[in-house]
Image (cartoon, rainbow, N blue to C red; front, top):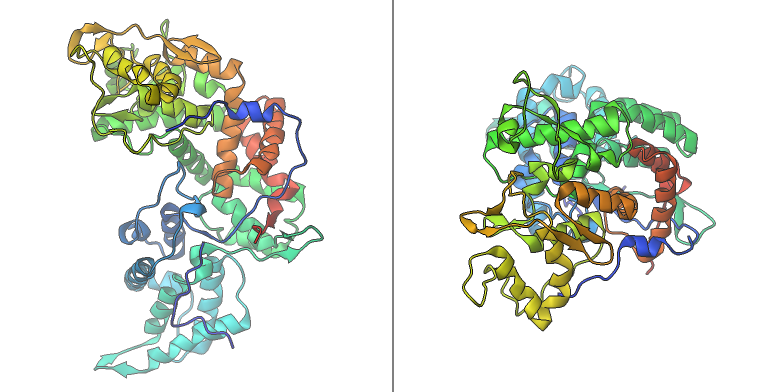
Length: 530
């Protein structure tokens, strides 16, 4: 018999680009291929949400005990996940903490039956089957239940004067199951197909993909019951299930989280009250465009109005009739959409100020889906640039980037973009001169080489949309988030197909998600080449 104990097995889980993803997607569309996939460890947020659903623990134990995830920009990039002895030890500490708290706070609800005594095997096996199905996202086999039930023997022993009982065994089962590889990783086995290295996923594996993509957590009992009934290999069935899931508040939270990582504002560097106001503003716009009114997704970037309270009305110098939180028009000027929000404008700064270079990187990597490689090893990136004439003005200081042959190639593609947003400080406030230097006026003109010049978020958004760069990039970003890693060149035809469908739908973001999960390729996986 295979034993799952006592050892936990952890599965393995500056040059510049000179073109956008749009250049690649303009070529003839090749036949799509199934995405490569390996075992993916749950991100800390996914693990915390899953544990909360399992045992009601709201203390974010994964975040407290485990090493923070790397954001590239998403926290679920399995290429970055490295197993280690430190990880194993931290997982055991986390599991022990969760199990102890579960027996104190939610014991009866978790167990679901009343034991007749320490040796009640019927109640124990019933608990293991129900809890195990939620934890491993599939029904357990008899042998697996036997493995976990063996831990009940500790409930009938006394060690060092400590009297154990039935719940001692329950706590051990929870502690062990929280460290099970199939709890911590999304392990997909599937059934081989006639295509080399391609397997068809089973219903519970498909449901797990749906739940983590659309809700950011493991499937609940209702979703597992749908998987039990079968039929998820059918595209229309998946689409119908996903449509219902998108009506759940958990889908809103997941879409918000995707945008916060993609656009870089998951941690807003401002006092709590201002940061919360920014978060409410951005959340309201995403909900309005994606869920409440299902508008053209591009309006996320071009919207002429925003949702503000008194704090943001003062911050942006916008009128707020009535004084209560409301949608207001930006009016004449350079503002439009999410690129005008303080949440987004707070990101990609440096040296306690806005950075034209960092904002250029933001636009190139997050909105153009270009690659910007790291600077050369001898570049001093920890000191702000200085001008040869001693001028404090940012325009003069950053001009030094273009006077160095080793820097000019990259910075010539980055800095001009950032200067087009320079009228807006790190809190999204409009300004006419550098902070602290009235003599350093800001002209606010920027340029995207090969496309044109612009000034401010509105004109930048218009350029992104008119060049169709944003169409392809948002699709690529969503796909990278969904599969848990950057796409490879041979997978880009799927992005082209998805982008075409996205445009044909009137840029319906929820429709893009539904098209993705109802594609036959969603229910399959491809093993990496040896």
